[in-house]
Amino acid sequence: MSLGLSAAAMNTCQLYSQLEWKVLVPVLTRPAMMAEVLRIRVEGLLMGLERMERVFAWLALGFMVWAFRSGSPHWPAWVALLPAVCALIMALHISV
Image (cartoon, rainbow, N blue to C red):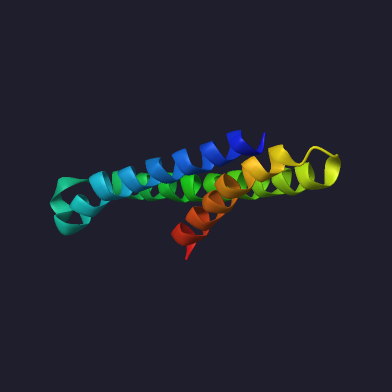
């Protein structure tokens, strides 16, 4: 579960980056390219992606901690540790 949520968080971060750098940054440098209404919608979509990424990352970290505490085979938790922490760092990097 944690690996899937970590992958979802990292994929959401990639979508956020592509949307911001390939759509919004060119529009901000040349404002005549996009109408104000569409720009506001794109910014709203970016805020939603940011929120979704944070939720995925925190859930991945929570499930990883749960895997450590749940039973004796701890290898699934060790496997999920690095992706969960990386997903959380990526999510916090966007929101800062």
